[in-house]
Amino acid sequence: MHSTTASGEVRPPVQDFAARVLLVDDEPDLLKTMKAILEANNFACRTAEDGFEALRQLRETAPDIIITDLRMPNMSGFELLAILGHRFPQIPVVVISGEFIAHMKDPGLLMNAFLRKGEYTPPQLISILRDLYSKRPLRALAKQTHAPLWINRRSTDYLLATCTDCLRSFPIENHNPVGDTLQSVECPSCGTSIAYAVDESVLKILDSQKLAAAPHSTPPQPPGFAAG
Image: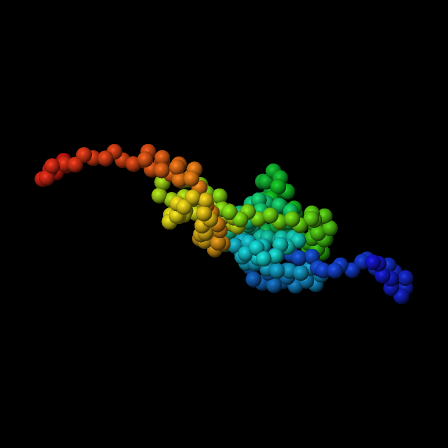
């Protein structure tokens, strides 16, 4: 509903809630400054110091927009972009970085907007955020709950699982071959607890690979025989 001032000026309708922004950067001072700018312009802002922290926050609440740096420890911004594109393609992403990405044929495949650090003004950023927010799609998050399993070609001693959160693969050495029963394991990269099941087809492939990889047995030698 529109309202008017005493002079008759029409005011735009007041939003019921502020747009939610997740800001990802490993520089504490920059996070503090950016958060103040965003909140001064009616954005609700949460911060994360790296990609893993960003993914942890995404488990709890999905933001309307994500702003991220590219050069960060633990998980680079490029890896985070790949995960966001796979798991949260409906959330617009703005990259603010000093990295040179002009060689990319189509940066829009990874991000909705790019700003180089030190070469933009706060009003320019706010304008981009408001435009992305006005065009945002309906939020419909779907999270894969079961981890896909892979069979390692070089070793039959373990399986490989892909984390449903950070998408990194890791070995499962002590799995219980109990058919379709769900089992759980913690991702060593991000700490997410994921569920998986080792079905009969996987067990059959593992058994056949173990037989193929087994060395030829050596016949027993008589006592006192020493191999030369």
